[in-house]
Image (cartoon, rainbow, N blue to C red; front, top):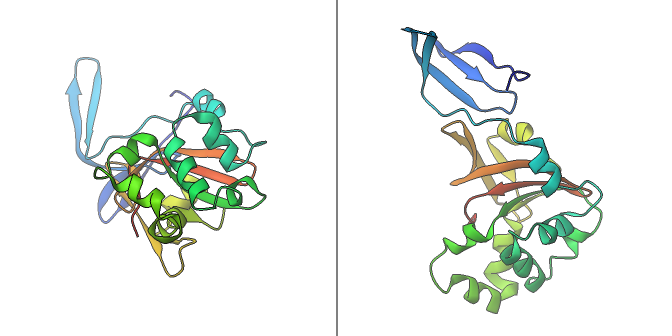
Length: 196
């Protein structure tokens, strides 16, 4: 982390640390002496910078969002849902999208039978749920973090953006991996399924 720097600024009368990735933490206690340095206590976990090697293995700016998701193997439910809803071609075609992509583990958190019920009626709620995961613009995690709401492909529906423990949240889902590049946009991996 030697090459990474934080900024410290006063916000609302409190010192706030901001990382280059946009994570924030408020300093709540300062100057605690230790035998090998000084401790400053913060109110949130500051996540480490995303491992560039892991990102390069997941993302590929020469492949579409659909191809990146298929190649990864952790998005089989998402890929199946996109295919069932007739949206797979959209994410294989040229465009400029941001996708909040739930992993298979995120889909597994849904109540039993939910996925099968959604796949059985792909033109209904499944299509709405999938469109709710997509922004019609390619946004880095810093751009996402600087927004309060992002309008989705589901008409008149926006995803709320917030922070929890220094992590970016899309509605109630944590962004666990960000800025996964593809030829037609960017993927931000989330730990649950967004529901409109």
